[in-house]
Length: 394
Ligand code: ATP
Ligand code: MG
Image (tube, rainbow, N blue to C red):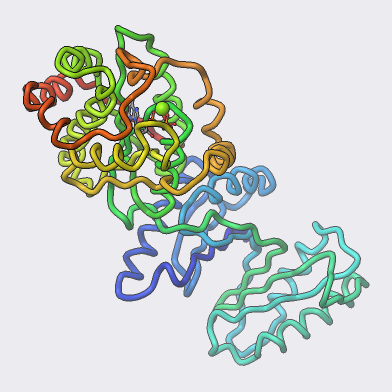
């Protein structure tokens, strides 16, 4: 019987919460594979098993499973495995039969066997098993054992009443199980950076609620379409997403009336934060996430970062703060958001903006400008005209 054996990082799952976390990881695997021919997903000691429905075209299914499982955070590595029952007395006949039936799918001249016992009650040591199974395969196929540089490594995992044989171990994405770090609200612009920030938070176990501010109808719908496409793409990592589209043009117009050009971007950002924070509270999210990277543009120099953050009551996290643009772009490419992010659009922050934003604003001055605005009404105005979209994967 075919199955997939997935290993998680032991360290990430320490302590009392372990069983809750394994359950969460199993639940995520179920969501990630819900449209595929998997009949059950269960926890075995130290690993998780996904059982494949009998009679499935395994090579086709394996291709889909590789894509899906390599996007499940918390998985350290995984392999396609053939399952065999095993005799607790230490007799290996049924394991030999199982391995014999699948070894012919492999092309190799030399091999080695790596055995791991998941249960130390099994009467033979890993070394005993590797030696005995190696002798058997040598006899069966005429191929040579090569411990240092074999064409094929055969992995055997022994549990108390079952064993699993596999030929390759693929890396998972690592990270923490999605959901174990609660929910955070990501301010998603449609640019290169914020989708990467969202990804990095998801990889640390935090579900994202997305908020995009746009200046339609003053500007085109392009930024909204990009935000939708980005969220749709990122949903493969969290299975279900919500995107809030906030019309921001009218709010910007009112800011523009009271604030000199050089300070506008800072007020735009402070109002974005206030609105996002209300959404965060509705979802019991514990922090806000942005794609700021230190010094990248005027609004991301030290003084501005501090003045913008002052508008937040929840923690404002900036996962990319110490990354170079090149590093961010490399990651955007590897997670598949780059191509969407570089489609030309009109970001709302370009509306009514000067060529040279202030880089050393005084917080007191910014607060004075805001006193001339009806903050509460502006925030409610943004929240009142919000549009909500839901996404699901697969
Ligand atoms: P990005 O590539 O994410 O757009 P950027 O380098 O262009 O970032 P800014 O445009 O200054 O930088 O935005 C900094 C951060 O502020 C963004 O990463 C995002 O988190 C947030 N932000 C900016 N504009 C918007 C918007 N229209 N909607 C939601 N969040 C935004
Ligand atoms: Mg931007």
